[in-house]
Image (cartoon, rainbow, N blue to C red; front, side, top):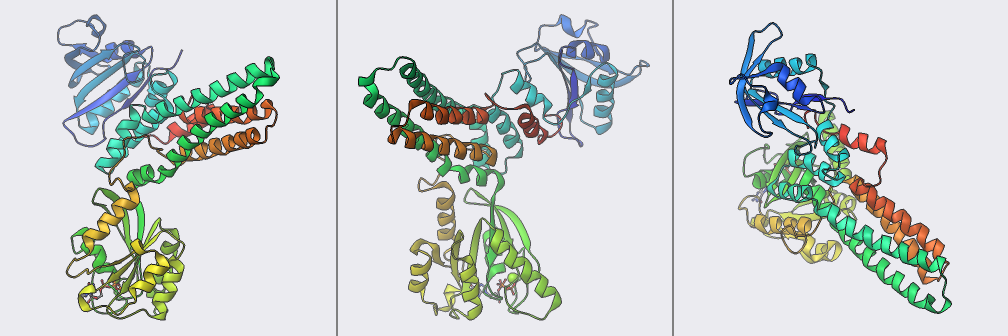
Length: 458
Ligand SMILES: Nc1nc2c(ncn2[C@@H]2O[C@H](COP(=O)(O)OP(=O)(O)OP(=O)(O)O)[C@@H](O)[C@H]2O)c(=O)[nH]1
Ligand SMILES: [Mg+2]
């Protein structure tokens, strides 16, 4: 029998209401030990899912809190087990006391993510849905919440199971031919295999192509504003944030440390860093700042290179542009209100036409065009989140990449008309990998790893 577990499932802090959840076969027994309904009847005598008014009492009979309790009978609960939830006043003391009483009554503390893990192990949700629960809790933007909520409905899992089924069909057909070889259908079989594999690899490639969208929506795009001193990096940060966050001055070397802010720009969540202007300097502190800027330039998922359009490019600009080349970057030619000394055409030739933008952090002209570019960069040309399924995290992405490569091996084998067995091996590998994403075929330690990242109470 699974242990009965309990935890506070609401945020710890002062709130109007807090909830303690008890889950497992002993949930009702635990609940009845500490909760007394005002009616005098036992909790279990009420129909499941009825909210019952009453009180929680201490072991010595003293009143702890006035509460509402509900019993949810397996499998109709979050965990698909018997669950009792007690809604008490949201103060820390009351919650702690009631939680302690559930322990005395026979429950043990739930591990991080254990409620959701049980929902998965009991077959109520698949692994991508469980991961989506965590995403919903952590959602930063409306778009990421929408995505997570959709995932929680099993959209990705549905798509993966369809693919898996197609691949299982391939294996079944091939094994039938292996068992009952008929020389004359051989060509047809290779053709059919190629067709099925082709449509599966297309679908997986498509999911992978949008992998970064889901990740950005969840975690925010890590973006660094870099450039030599005085080109207007901090002014750009302030313009995007619409507030005077960073100090701006006419003196080169104003910003000395990294200033990081989170913001939503046109629905795109950014983790935006303003950095110290990159130049060689003897100033000890500035030097450290410049070092940090260089490091961020390397690590950022998007580099915004700012140059001063009114001055023309210097050797320092050149060095920074070179470092940004080949990385995901966009070139902002700032101070467009002061006239243009920079050869825009040359920059566009070098970085691509759409990646060079003129802007004025002072008059704000060009800021909207930049937001539009960014939105397109994250969401693709549709400009909004498409209706399809999205990958949520790097675990899923890695497994999909491996599945894709196994299917490509299988396709090559089919192209070369290798024995069917060779194809079957690769297709089976892909089937297992897809199953690992949804949790249909997954090892215990991976499951434990995933759920350990949850917070306690989930
Ligand atoms: N006319 C005009 N001036 C600007 C513009 N953007 C910034 N400036 C001015 O340029 C100077 C430098 O701006 P900052 O934003 O501090 O430049 P920075 O790149 O952060 O400089 P460091 O922190 O020293 O690396 C300030 O005097 C700003 O007012 C712009 O678009 N037009
Ligand atoms: Mg600055």
